[in-house]
Image 1 (tube, rainbow, N blue to C red):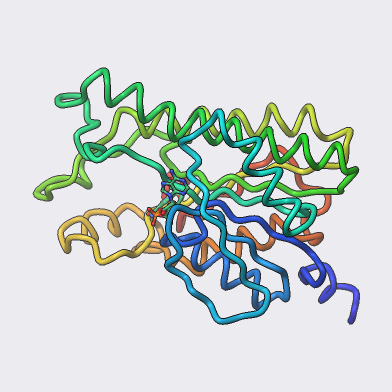
Image 2: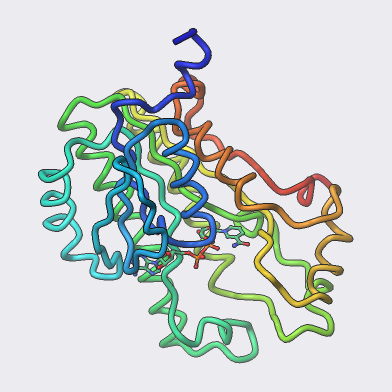
Length: 257
Ligand SMILES: NC(=O)c1ccc[n+]([C@@H]2O[C@H](COP(=O)([O-])OP(=O)(O)OC[C@H]3O[C@@H](n4cnc5c(N)ncnc54)[C@H](O)[C@@H]3O)[C@@H](O)[C@H]2O)c1
């Protein structure tokens, strides 16, 4: 294989994807399989059901933070060492849509911080520590959002049943700095940690929302999940071997103005 093709190829590598059955996770899984990697999808459901010898699924509920270490060690024993870990999970409470300033309850706020922010901190650290122990030149990618970078624009929710979220901005802001802090600590072990701040992804949203959102994005549309998957594949690959502690903004220019 030629030099540059090789950099983007994952042949012989184990790519653990948390939330690999979701909107973005499914596409990331497909991209990694296309690039010849072995996908181990860790999720509470197996929606991908990809018929591919390189696709494996293991049930994992990341909310059970104190059981994560034991569970991950047993999965690694079964499939082998992780070369890459990508977090595409999105755990949330049933009343997540009420996490706006007017309707949020303290109970829901605390629970969402625990299951989304605390779980991602713990599992990212866990994979980094395993990579250190096994002396792996690993890569970790955390899915993030434009709302880890900027406040939400209230205009895009006008005349829709959607609203802003208090918890989301805190969770995404926390995850963004976690990545920088981890990159700072684990760099000496040859482990790269990066995030992707994605703009809104097409998912059959309300027409009014699509119109309001598209006006603000410089490319005048939402993202396709494949456009986020390409970025995740790049950061995971050797093609990004000198990139760590960074945040790749994939937002059609949303945060540029
Ligand atoms: N969809 C968007 O428009 C968008 C935009 C920007 C950023 N993001 C970010 O991308 C990431 C993925 O978002 P998505 O839209 O693909 O979400 P999604 O809800 O479609 O998928 C999330 C996946 O996580 C899994 N999951 C949920 N709870 C879990 C748990 N407790 N344990 C293990 N797995 C669990 C789900 O089963 C699902 O497969 C999130 O970090 C989100 O904030 C999404």
